[in-house]
Image (cartoon, rainbow, N blue to C red):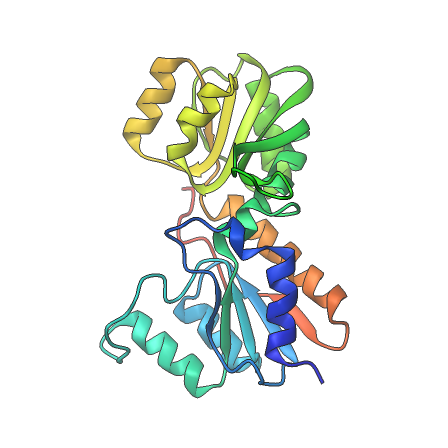
Length: 263
């Protein structure tokens, strides 16, 4: 019999909590560590749709990339969407674990996979953690095997992330040799990408003013979407859990969807 603590222990090795940002809320957020686990659902975000799926499919654990709760709650009541979701999961004995930024930065985490998916070589952390025993850190930077036009990077991203479009700041014909990546909403990493002398920066989303800054400072910027730059890894994580715990059933939420659509 597999219990929740065993799954938590594996996840803490897979995405060490020391890699999480100081502001984050990672680890086991809801649950009894002694609870038997037979079914695990991964998702990017806990929403009414993913909660309904977890209850319907009798999951005992949701591994959600984005934490719920994220910030401390003074109350948990049915007066708020977050409160209703937490109450429903607690009543259904569904635990919540969030790896969030520890998974972003892990050795086989989201940013590493994103960099490899782009075809980068000599991949290194964009913002290394001081004295990290494994030389890990946030974001990734690397070089393409040969210079290529931005439009080719766009094509690679579309294929890897299974998306139809993205926002571009810059000229799609410009050649790039080096790139930095940071999944989700990481416009704050633009300065690090510039310090690393990268020609291109890829993040899920950012502000209008960060786009203007990238344009004025001469670095190409690609924005495939917050959901797109992280959801693929949630699907991969379900496979990792299934392989690690073959006696369990693990799957990525099928009802979860990007709230933004291209029209």
